[in-house]
Length: 431
Ligand SMILES: Cc1cc2nc3c(=O)[nH]c(=O)nc-3n(C[C@H](O)[C@H](O)[C@H](O)COP(=O)(O)O)c2cc1C
Ligand code: SF4
Image (cartoon, rainbow, N blue to C red):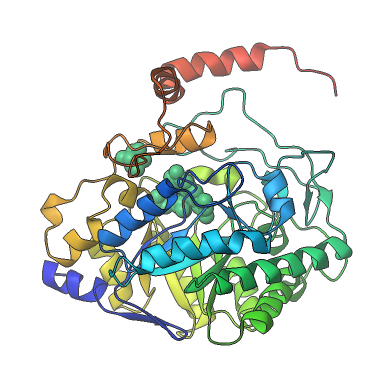
């Protein structure tokens, strides 16, 4: 495909429900926004997103944001942007208004985390809940490049969510979605991927319930389908509503794209406009934060989703920074747009450069993942290929020299092998 055809395909407008995106390059959700400690967007949150809008992204997804008090309490990465109270609406409105006022035509999507399920952190006397009591053996089947967990890590065993809890959470998500609409967001994404609450229902890997929420495809879809239907009733038929889903567990005993697509097709009956496809979960995190452009396409995952969902549900591809690969998948109808996370940390002007045929000027993400190590170790996210990233606003938080050295050491294979040996040699505490 020629460079001009790539630009033409990726630059074509995309309709999602009543919304039209100006092009098909989207900023994926990232908890790299430095919100305030009490859960409001900061100057840095808005400056970071504004810079990506100015770089030409057709839409930005506002990541790391919680829909419910439960999600706020148990979040594994904080602080988070909050949607769990009406008091947050004015600040959310300010974020959306400032992005719309850039005049870039960017669309702004809220990502809503209902609860963190198997990845939640028990706090304040509250335990975590999931479809079934299965913990996460972090990275059991592969970590991203240069990400290590010395000694490994298994999360606490969640309790099986009761039907009352499932219904309460559903209402809280409905309320959060209404707040997002009140704040003027152009679209809403419910986070149901990785090992988070709703994701745990979708796969037999993490759902071994015997009630109406477990077993058959219809039953495993039920919790999320009911939530989508309830949100749809609240926000009406015209607001762009979608899900973020894992398309493949990549874990023995888990489910592949056919299984996830079947469950998604059932949920889509409740009124889905789009699905953001992501790969793997926390046990196969290397598949989620991959270094290979177009891995999903090579493994035939979006193709299976398209087959199951038909052309009526917009599909967003992940982790395909090679513009020609993404354009080819859009041109042949496999997906509708490309969603990028790390590449737009490394180069916020990637969309503009691709659309103007200036690919030779792109600053490429090297997939060395120091940004990911920072996220995991709760150090302000920065990108070593883009010194401006994370410092788009004068009040931004910056890491100090000790933190930078820590992040470097945490990505060093030799040091981490020593740390791993030491951690595994330590006597285990009795529980
Ligand atoms: C710093 C950082 C923060 C992230 N935060 C979120 C998040 O809040 N929500 C989410 O769904 N994914 C999050 N992700 C995952 C990305 O959205 C994306 O799925 C992943 O990085 C793979 O896409 P990529 O290859 O384009 O980077 C984060 C990734 C990074 C690097
Ligand atoms: S730190 Fe920057 S270059 Fe490295 S993986 Fe993250 S986004 Fe890419």
